[in-house]
Length: 179
Image (cartoon, rainbow, N blue to C red; front, top):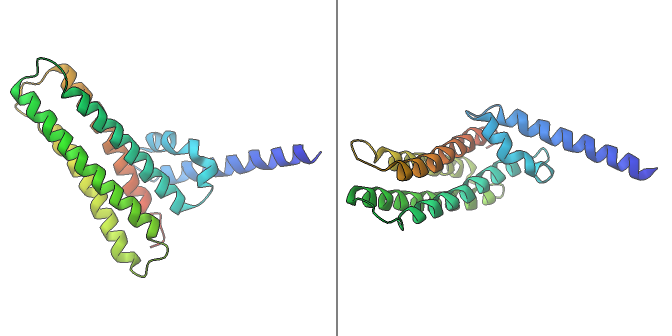
């Protein structure tokens, strides 16, 4: 009979963990995007805000790698106009900067608990992640006044919009940390 009890406990724990994530995600601008990204990691997050933020940031970094790969694929398309090539090049560059900033942020977040300068490091973290948002929007701003094919515009917009939502959610989740 212990296995039934353990199963019930695990089910109750999983429900508690998902409730924690749902509650945290409700503090973000894009709660559905947040919950969809983080709920599969409920058993790793449990009710730990640090782990929640770490996994959210890791998920955002992975999504940025994927976006970078999509933008890279665009650069190999045949028949691109000079302005499209330039836009793709600039987006690849800003996505690369976003990756650097997210990697730096992830390292800082991982070291935050043992740090004697938590407030300063938290400010750095928020600054870098805010810069990621700027990088993402810089990429789509490139379209203004330019003639860009539907395929290029759609691929970049789709990738960048999703990244912006994830990044915005990370910033909101950081406010739940006790630093």
